Figure 1 (tube, rainbow, N blue to C red):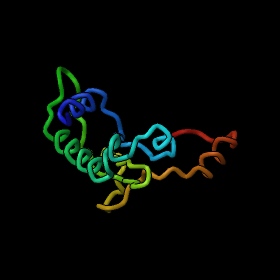
Figure 2 (tube, helix red, strand yellow; figure 1 turned 60 degrees about the vertical axis):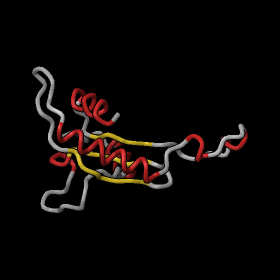
Figure 3 (tube, one colour; figure 1 turned 45 degrees about the vertical axis):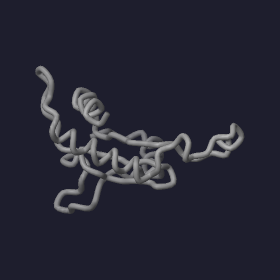
Figure 4 (cartoon, rainbow, N blue to C red; figure 1 turned 135 degrees about the vertical axis):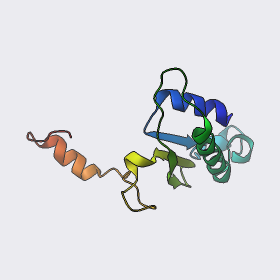
Length: 121
């Protein structure tokens, strides 16, 4: 399955790829389902993300598509059962192997939104 997703990701060339299980909600119990019956564990989601990362490194671009720089694990959130892969050259802090520029500063975002002089880069 990871190879098929890798081919799709290579075609779209997104900056971010999120592998996600599901966030637990009480409604599962209402229908007699347990999380173990229906949802991958966070470890399984993380393992799939690692496999997808490996496949992305090995899948060649199709046709005239430009190659996409490497993806790496940028963040994970156990409670949300999610793992984020990001394009390293674009989102990793230069010179710092473990730091990423993937945090959204919502306060700064809304301050910029309200500023008539704001311009995008």
